[in-house]
Image (cartoon, rainbow, N blue to C red; front, side, top):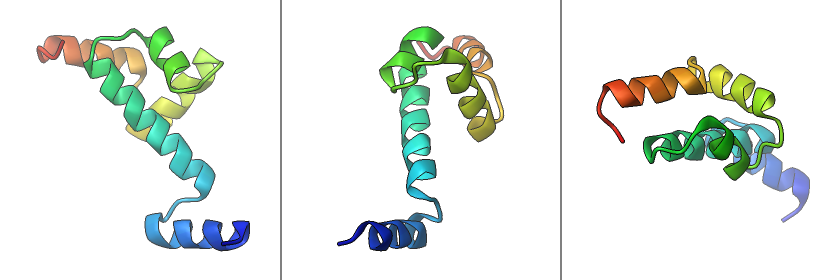
Length: 80
């Protein structure tokens, strides 16, 4: 399968470009790692972001909350 065919098929199935799909997968994994109790810096590095500020921007754009707010919410709700 050619690259352009792959891109077109992925977009048809997911509604996302390959880059958007990759970002969403990484950020969903970050959300899972927060529920496991890891801190923001560790999570951003673990999911492949060299820049914590870029990670925070992307996370906030997808989930409409900052990583720190997410962690505070998890603590309040009793998730370790």
